[in-house]
Amino acid sequence: MFDIAEKVHDETRQGEAFAPFKADANAYRKRFYIESYGCQMNFSDSEIVASILNNEGFGATRNLEDADLVLLNTCSIREKAEQTVRKRLTEFRKIKESKPGMLIGVLGCMAERLKAKLLEEEKLVDIVVGPDAYRSLPGLIEEAETGQKAVNVLLSRDETYADISPVRLDSNGVTAFISIMRGCNNMCSFCVVPFTRGRERSRDALSIVQEAENLFSRGFKEVTLLGQNVDSYYWINEATNETVTFAKLMEMVALINPLLRVRFSTSHPKDITEEVLRTMAKYENICNYIHLPVQSGSTRILQLMNRTYTREWYMAKVKQIKEIVPGCGISADIIAGFCTETEEDHQDTLSIMEYSAYDMSYMFFYSERPGTLAARRYKDDIPEEIKKRRLQEIVELQNRLSLESNKRDVGKIFKVLIEGDSKKSTAEWKGRSSQNKMIVFPKINNGLKPGDYVNVQVNECTQATLLGQII
Ligand code: SAH
Ligand code: SF4
Ligand code: F3S
Image (cartoon, rainbow, N blue to C red; front, side):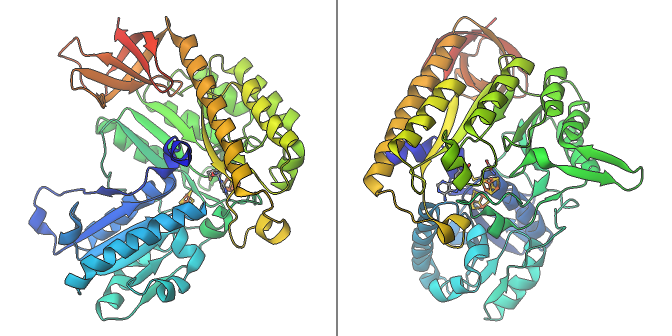
């Protein structure tokens, strides 16, 4: 059943190999291969790493055996995420045995969490680089080429990679992610991110708008503004003394062109302001969709989690969203079996899910992470079978809520941005509604292409997808 829970979680879109090719593949002196794990921030960072490596004469390859440098961009969020990476490293060992010159590097959150210890634990690793140290990769590679182990896990207070133009990896040419901030100051007690990603810092707003404009001019039609906590985005333009809040930033991006859709992820419920909601309502091209992680429906558990809101406060936020942005899609992250969670607390989680009527959720059972506040303060005291049973109940409820939400859309018409062929058939398009639901529909007009908008009437649905036809 955990497979279900993990599968529905976008953040475990694991182990994809990317290959940006230059027209002249021989222009590069060496090849790198990169796999990314974890959240969208990591996938986005891999695009920055690709850009840094391209400038150093490294071209990407999709073929592990061809690579001079193999990189894993890793995640530490749950124990399972780290196990996956360890398993992958074991597989790399065999390849390295037949190719001794090949360098192996670990990037991302696991590199940051374990630091030089990773080199002791995983002897085949040559390079360890934390999320704020990617600019030092060329130097570290040189060091490793001389046979030394190379490490840089320094966290930074100001690194945002604002000036590095990401190489879009594995892109559909229609949708792209733009990192707008890094780090997190929130200290939710279960979470390792503040330790692996460091202090929160916002990227220069002008560089964000420039990146979005550049994407639009290249035919992209949707950008997702990314951060661990986007609503606390805050940047001061020193030239004009103007402050840019998240609402303002979203407006600046939305104003680039009405044909450019704007999404964002992730919002901490405590920081999403009325100003943000009003801005969403004001611009048609800011999508009506909010990922609003609840984690638990019990005020007592929320307090232990250090989430800083209560059950009632969260419910009022959901109500406010639905009032100001009618028809807004809402999804959540939910953790089952946090320390001391009782059956009653668990029932509170189920009932807040019903109340919020989430269109979708990412669901996990609690996994204690070394060094976090919860690991230091509370005992991980819920037996695994209970965690799993509660998670199963949460997953089943979400399945029902998703189906109900989709059924409510049957008969309605949505403006869909075509992203490409559907998974099943080249005779069908797939694309998403403003509410972030995937809609599949038959191709009727040969003139249409990915990046075009069409109105689609929904006439059927499954729990995961809406099916319709162009009108
Ligand atoms: N910044 C985002 C979430 C980042 S992590 C936010 O604040 O919402 C993504 C999700 O992983 C979290 O929302 C949480 O539901 C889950 N998660 C984080 N730490 C976890 C842990 N120790 N055990 C289980 N799930 C965890
Ligand atoms: Fe982790 Fe909380 Fe920060 Fe999200 S807001 S990254 S859950 S500490
Ligand atoms: Fe994982 Fe780090 Fe993201 S721990 S979820 S890759 S910020």
